[in-house]
Length: 605
Image 1 (cartoon, rainbow, N blue to C red):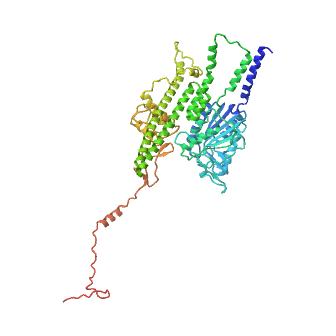
Image 2: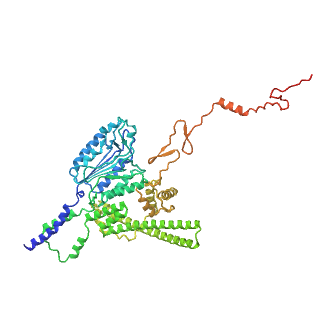
Image 3: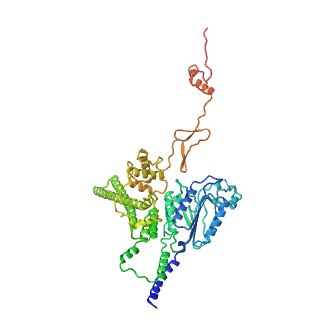
C-alpha cells in the first residue's frame, strides 16, 4: 500500500465514527411536519377570540424552529376538517416527527374526547358522532410518523354546547373539560391545556396563557419535551393563580427528546470529511499557515447564523436553564459573552430578592421583640442585624441595576450592529442603484463590537416612547405612545408597579422599567372600564339593566320606585294635615256606681 492509500485509509477510519454518529442521530432531528388548527368563528355558539391568534404564534414558532412543513388552517367546518386530517396523514407517512396543534372548542362524552368544527350544531348528544371529530380520529393522522407523535390540545375551555344539548339517554355522561387519555402507540404524547376534568382560561390578552407559555419553550433547541411541558405547566399555573394545570399523557424513552435538535452538525461534518477524502492528500502552502489557521478558527456563516438563532431563543426563554444550556453548547465567542451578561443579570436579581426578603424578616423580628418588651441586649442585636440586612439589600439593588444596565446596553449594541449591514446594503450606490443585500447578514457577526464598549444611550423621547409602547402592550396605558412622559404615562407606570410588585420611579422613563415590562408576556394591569361600562373578557361593554331597573351613579342596576297616584298622595297629605281629635272624657271614680254601672245623675228644678 502506497503513501496515498495509507492516508486515504486513515481518513476513512476517521470518517467511520462520524458517519456512525450521523446515522445514529435521533430520528426527531429529521423530517418534521406540523398541522396547526385554530377554530374561532363558531356559527352556533359564542365565537372565541384567542384560537386564531394562538394558531398564528404557534405556526411562527414551528417555522422558526426549522420544521419542514407547517400547515395552518383556521375556522374549519366539518368537511374541511376531515379533508385536512386526511391530507396531513399522507404527509406524516414520510415524516419522522408529526405534530398537531388544535385551539378551539372540545368536549368529552362517555370518556371520549371530541374536537368541534365551527359549523357544528350539536342539538342532541348523539350529534357529536356525526358533527365532531374524536381524538382517536385525530391521532390516526399522526400515527404513520416513524419516531415521534405529538398532539397539543388547547381545547379545554368551558363548552357552551353541553348546556343546551338535549340528552337522548339520561345516563350518558358529559363532563367538564376533556377526559384522560392513554396513547396506545409508543413515543406518543398528548398535551392538554388543562388536566382532565377541568377547564382552561382564555386569559386577558390576545393569546391564551397556555399558548403564550408554549411558544416560549417548545422551540428551544435541545430542550427535552418533558421539560418543555414542565416549564409550560409552571408558567400557566403562575399566570392563572394555580387555577389551571396543564397535563401531558403518554410516555417517552430514557433519551432526551427535543422537538428542535441542539445542533445538526454531524451531517455537515460527514459531508466535509467525505469531500476531503475524495480529493485525496493536498499540500498546504508553506508560507500561509497563519491564514489557514485563521480560516479554520473562524466559524462559517451557517454556524454563525445558528449560534445567533440559538442565542435569541435562549434570550426569549429568559431563564438560567436556557442560558446555561446555550453556554454549554457555545462556550466561547461573542454570543457566549452576551449570554453570560444575561446570566449575571438574572443572578443579580435573585440575590436582590433574597436580600430584600432577609431585610424584611429582620425588620419583622425587631418589631416582634419591641412588642414583647425584650431586653436591651436582644434589641441591640436585632437592630444590628436589621442594619446589616438593609445594607446588603442596598448593595444587591445597586449590583442588580449595574448588571441590568450592562446587559441592556450589550443587547442594544448587538441589535444595532446586526441591523447596520442590512441598512448599509439597502443604501443607494454612487450610480443611483441600491446595493445588493447579502443573503445572510450574519457574516458580520465576527466583526461585532466588544460588549463592554460604550454606546450612546437612546434619547429621553425615544426611551419614553419605548416604555409607553410596552405599557400599552401589558394593558397599563390606554393612550398613544407619543414619546412625551406626561401625567397619563406616570399613572400607567404607577399602575404597573402596583400590579407587578415593582418600585420604578414614575417621574421619568427608565431603561430598567423598559426591561422589566418587556419580560411580561401578557397583560399585567387589570382592565379598567369607565362609567356605565363593565368588563367582558378583554374589552369594556355597556351595562344593560333589566326592565324596571336603572343604572345608578355606582354603576349598579337599581330598582325604580313606583310612583303613587295623585289621589292617593292627596289623601295621605290630608290625613297628615288633619288635627288630632280630643279624647272622650271618662267618668270619674266618684260618680261611678258600684259594679261599674252608669252613674246617678240629679236634676234640680
